[in-house]
Figure (tube, rainbow, N blue to C red):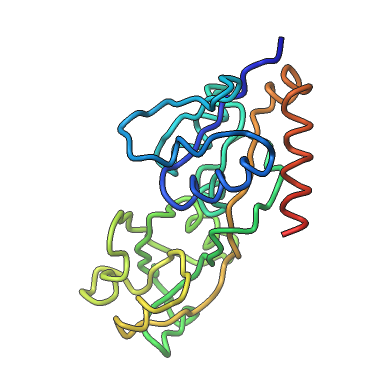
Length: 212
């Protein structure tokens, strides 16, 4: 009897793109895109279970083995720092983790602490520590761009897709920290105990991504 495989997914674009890939793998899971308040659903065969969580929680569920596999942005992986296997760059949900602020802002000119507003607190700490620069990290969870505009921070650290929001608020990218996209992650124990089910699926997904 095959082991049940559990996925942790974030509803929205990541789930929609994930379903496209899983359908190509032969998993009938279109039903999970239908309007519903259900937090746990199964595919038609019952072999695959889908747990819907906040994007930032996907690595947590996978690390603790509640889910065997997850789809999550690289930015979230960097921030959470969870003990999971990152196996495949899925190539969608592309963005950049960037420093942004007003044009002409010279980061090296700040002799005292540079004030940085961000929801990526751990990424920011690691980045500025690696640069040997003092930085006061100010946690924000919405409208990060407001930081420099209202004087709460000197700059922000956030994901940038088109850059339009920055432009509309007279801000610009000052530096790029990392290129990000959706990643397939797997629980370390599950990869061993459910290898017969997980490894062929991972291989299929990898082949699909390479042929896109």
